[in-house]
Image 1 (cartoon, rainbow, N blue to C red):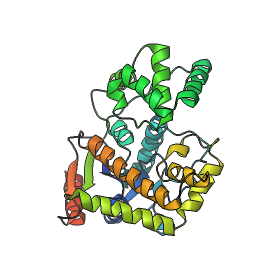
Image 2: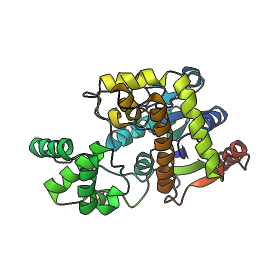
Image 3: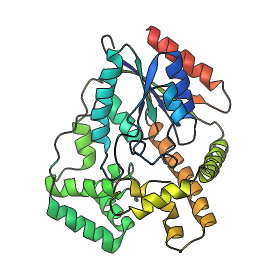
Length: 311
């Protein structure tokens, strides 16, 4: 790893305390934070995306937060390119880049140095797939992806129609699956010397309790107003319209469900998302797991970082 830039990654499921730990590490080890979250990039979407507060962002400099409008597309390729630039800029000032987030695809692509080739684009196929989606729904299109590329389908939620349709489109254009393209784009050597710290609970129920409590706090902080903003602009906010924290309230705005039911569905969706995040991260053998409920996790994470930087 000699000569490679050192980066620290704080990852784990939603509501596991990543923000607080990353700020502590950044203050202690002269770091700056890069958000590895697929939604925190967007302006005006603060509560549902669980961004660091304004006060927290004043304490430690954050990158890749609040720099795009909600109607702009954002994907893993854009994240990797922007994160690489941020790492260069942070290290040039003698500071430590700390990548923080729960989007496993983003983190894995960055640390593995995935190189994204220019993918073909076809307006006609896009229109055909969009029409199929409108006529048959998310599950139908997801089944097509499962048949084409079962490996990649396990990494994508059926409601993430942007990724589902794009993977089908690429297969139709190239005859090559997204899984194969990702494998082909992985270099032999990783670009960074990375320490991955994973946060989790030894008792899964405690994580779920934390998620439920955070949703209640978000509701008190006017999450519903933010969800209404997304709902009112749903035809333009293509990427974030399907984000957990917003779409669960659409039935309420359409007078098809009560607010209480929608809040319960958000809690369930968040718990299910945490399961999927943990499934992804548990495949990454390099992660050093720290249990929040049974260990002095801040001290352990600090010791790991100290040891990593001293090598």
